[in-house]
Structure formats: C-alpha cells, structure tokens
Amino acid sequence: MDIRRMLVLVVVARAGSLTAAAARLNYTVSAVSQQIGQLEDEAGQPLVERRPRGVTLTESGRAVVRHAEQIERAVQAAHEELEEIAGLRTGTLRLGTIPTVTESFLPAAIAAFRERHPRVDLRIHSAQRSGIGHLLEAREIDLAITWMREVQDTSDTAGTSTELIFREPNVLLVPAGHELAQRRTVKMEDLRHEPWIIRTSPNVLAVLEEACEAAGFAPIVSFEARSYQEAQAMVAVGMGIALVPQLSLYSLREDIAVISAVTPRPPTRRIVLARRRGERLSPAGAAMGQILMEAGRAWKAAQG
Image 1 (cartoon, helix red, strand yellow):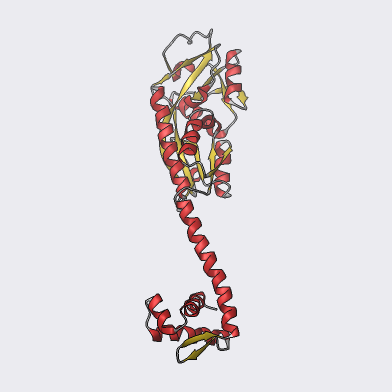
Image 2 (cartoon, helix red, strand yellow):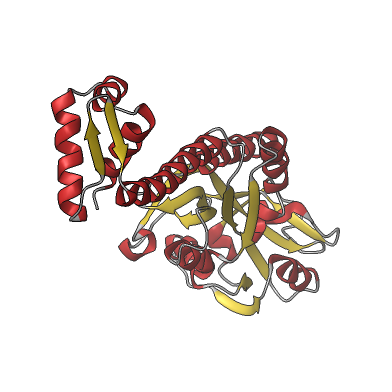
C-alpha cells in the first residue's frame, strides 16, 4: 500500500472529517477524498464511513491507521536521529591511520575531536599504507589519513579521493660514528656505495629507488626492517644507512645521526586525507577531516 496515502488516512482519522484533514494537510477536500479512494482501491475494501458530520474508520481502516502510525513514528525517529548525527550529538566515526601518523600528530587530533564532540563514538584502525586502501574499499573505515608517493601510478588512487595535508621530506639516518654524521647536507650521488636499510614495503622501496635513480645509481639493500624503529636499530649497529620519513622520528635513538637535507632533490611523500571517491563524508567525518588538517599542518609548522 502507498505509504503517503496511509499517512493521509492517519490525518483524516485524527481530524474526524475530510474537510478538517484537508485544512491540516493544505490540500483540497477533493484531493483528500481522491487519496482515500485510491487507498481503498489498494485495500480492496472500505476504510472510512462517510457521515453527515464527518467520517469514522471501519475495522479495516483502523488496522491501516495502526500500521501507518508505526511508520509515522519510525519516520519521526529517523528525522530525530539524523538531527542528532548532523549536530554531532551521536554517531560513529571509523578512522584509518598509518603508524607514523598514529605516533606523531594523531593524538592531538583525537584529543581535539573528543573535546568538541564527546558523544561521537570514535574508532581507530591502524594499518600500513596498503591496508588502508583495503579498509576503505571494504567500507570498514569512513576516512583515512595515509601517505602517497609524489609520482603515482593510476592504480594507486583508484576509487579514492585525497586531499593534501602537507608534503613530508625524507631524512637520512647514519650511525653516530659515520663519517657523514657531522654534516648538515649530503648529496645522493655521494651515497652510491653505501648499503641501505629500508622498511619492508614496495612503496617505501620505490621512494628510495626513485631518489637513487635520479642520482645515477641503484641502491644496495642490506636489511629490510619491519618498522622504522627496527631500521634505526640496524643503522645504529652499522648495517647501513636509511632514508626515512620525518614523521618516523618521534622516538629517535641517541646512537644515530639525522641529516635533514638531502640534495639536490630531497625525496618527499604526501600526507593526505583519503575517502571513497564520489561519496559525501558524514558530519563527524567532515569535522574530523578538518581537525586532522589543522593538527597535521600545526605539526609540520613546528618541525620548521
């Protein structure tokens, strides 16, 4: 049965006449009568009894009104819940993040979001870059903060819309006793004979390979680390040097040195907000997105 016509019958029942119902609905009396007639055609039986001073419901009419009122309450509840969500007074936000962000500026963003919107249920999923894409595609998260190479292939952003937060330079890690440890800058071509330590990831390796290729050589990888902290440990004992993102230096060992300027073109990566292409963020997602932009750029400014 047509729900709109069922709801018209509810108004008729409450008003007690077609004339009064028409006034409440801002319809003509004939329009209300037509709606009721069509509803009776759908029901296959009379729903109202027309009397000189109004109408009364038949037994079938009362049954339709009972179900229609349940629909009316459900619609009203939906409106109220949407207003709560729009006002960020309820709802759930599932955020994806990469570990280097989790360990750097994400805590400040979480604190700001919870202070402003304490009733929104915030859930965090941490994953490596490749995992973030899968989580978005599987709809297990609504919004993500991740990284992208400066040079992307088309499959890298398929189905995903991104917004730049900041560009993050990579820095060079060397053992504290290395001959380069006291230098402020270094040229990539001066590193052609050095063994390299990388974090296990095709995309991380691609950043290093692109930088070395621009300097005219291919890197010799001596160790593949599971984390940037493991990479630092291997640098410290002389297994090689490492090119790592600035975000990974939240916990820096004392027995390694950081060379912050690699010339002539320091490798960079883009820290971005990512979401499913063509879909609008929820109010909570939009609010968190703005907070992440602010927190990320504040962190970047503080690094100089």
